[in-house]
Image (cartoon, rainbow, N blue to C red; front, top):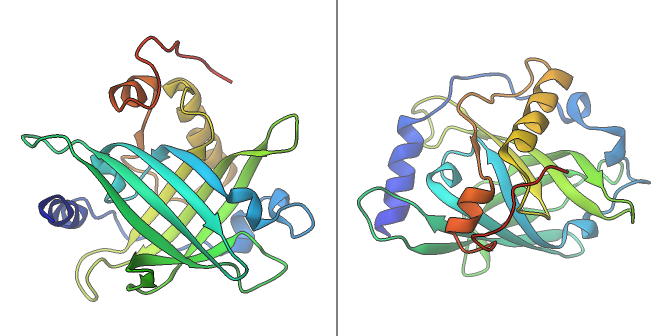
Length: 219
């Protein structure tokens, strides 16, 4: 519980400047149309490569495992804790919510934290606005943006969460940054990206996700 309290306090200290939440239709790629994307394609293991999310940014690595159901979804977030002056500890949280309420826009999820299989916080829009597929047509990268509101109602600034996921944890930091920069150029002024954090091969190696001898590569 000490680590969770630390995350909450740091989230307040690192609250980002208020900005308007972009409308989903203004940022979503045509790849997210209902005839091109199905939420079931999100299932399985994902590695968080870049984020501004105010709690996961204090983890050395984050590994997510998604399960998609008919109207809802859940995932576990395993945080490889890297809090200064503490013993490294892995923390796994359950998160989830509702799939899109609009069949024409399957990428706009609605998310909150979960305890004992029940959502215990308000469900905020979590917008999957772009994806990348491999030569087999499988989804291998996801670009999310969420408008979290205020951590404590009426206190502080609104928070925003940019999350870049990959099926492959060996992507170089240079390549990860190029993807974040491309999102910023493609949607100028839409995203709050100040202070985003990347997780590259060095961090994934420290967390034991990839071997320490793993070469740094770009895709």
